[in-house]
Image (spheres, helix red, strand yellow):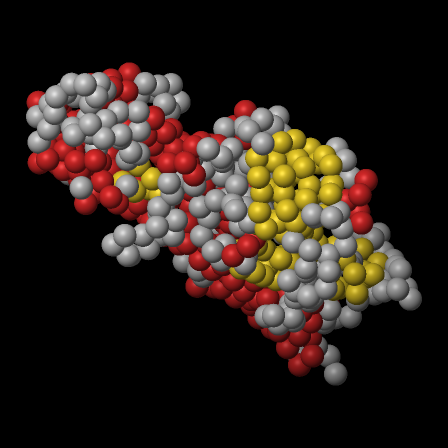
Length: 622
């Protein structure tokens, strides 16, 4: 039998429940515009009834306030984060592809098409007065303007690659900062929840950080209960919270976290001929990693398609080679000369105009990497690499014993990156330059000057990119008599032969030495070559920009379309998520009235029972 004051206890539980509900509603209203806040709701249930051993069975005991829970849907969280990684990727691609497109765009003054048309017009002028120094000097100057254009483009692309490289480091720093903060929050959450309560606001803060993290890199979250080892049936209240990124790399494990550390490549670790020095490789290290210690957990796979987010977009822009990279099969190993022969099968590796190999770098043979100090090509399908026999880090001799029996191993330099990033545009420029210079030089070296002297080559490359007025240049023999072909020429060092810049009269204008000064047969050959010779992707010389600009424009358009698509999805998914976890002011206002009424009614019950007890105690018999 419950006591006479049982009803007062029931009314008091109603007061407590209504008070908790009103406080929670007030908290929701206060956080209407707080980023990442999840609407909270009081969970209530009927208190355990009392058996009264009478005909009506049990007496209700009021209400228990069980918990204050967040209203949140994990399904929408996953959808939002999956979308964020794609939005982050394409936003970076769109931005940097737009810059490439701007660099290539012909502005009517210094663009490629304008300069090339001007050069062709000056070539026509030479035909009208082939023996005149002025017309030849004007033509040579217009050709110099074209080489300057490519020099400038090379600098722009290298600066762009450097900017992307720096942003990769800042992105890794941002990821590390979030990982550290999440690990700290995990500890705070467990401290609170081991007391039996739920750390709603801390969990909201953590989820908001994961949302931000998903824009930088693909994220997968796993949370499991921690069980007492001595009593498996006992739930401690703590949880193990893990964050996995890039499809399999652990970033956070409850209170501990790992770092993504950017380590600059040395000058002799390049993987592309035109890469700038200091491009970052990414390593995974413990949170207590100190710079220079060299203590890493593992390498971060830069060509992993599961990286996602801004980091993936930046890596593809910095390293994208459209899947054209050096790959082959190991052959004979010579232990005396430390040379390894590698056979290749891809056509682009047999064409020196398309070669992107750095003079020295890192080569992977099987599962191991070695540094090479030089290479040669036999003109057919075999490269021979000279491996460095000293480890730069330890100073000890490199163990080459593994290579004795490594025939038919896969050999790679760099990775296959299925995107048209900065290395792709650099390689395309180099291919055009090499083919164009070869065709021009083949014509100018077979003709004669106006005075009947043998013609010389016109286009070359500086041996070292220098500000000197007369830098050393490759000779025509160096460009043609080796199996390297025009490999030495790049957009970085492309130049007109300095002797011709100073004396335009050495330009070979005549095709027939017996003709007079004004004979222009060789100049006519150049004009025909410019208009008809297919030297680049099935197009004439002057159509270079059309091809490259089409690539850049298509990539920019695709990236822009995808960014807008995922931006729209972002808003749609966020609205869906807010419909569940967001605070609706109208709904909360209605709840406030409802809980106020509940509180008032519970107060009325207390008042009524008080009057009954007064009557019972004070006015009922002595």
